Length: 67
Image (cartoon, rainbow, N blue to C red; front, side, top):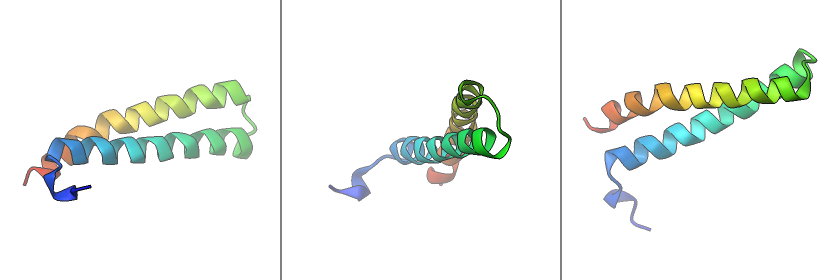
């Protein structure tokens, strides 16, 4: 796999997906175990957090990688 051939948009999308996924899982576990929230509600909040992180980070990372 040639990592140098990736475009800045590819890098931004992959990194934003990774960070969004980990952030969503962390939010799910923190809300479920830490705050004793209902597991389904914690799952919905975790998914929302992951999508929000992805939406915020992708344009930011795309701007950083295009420099």
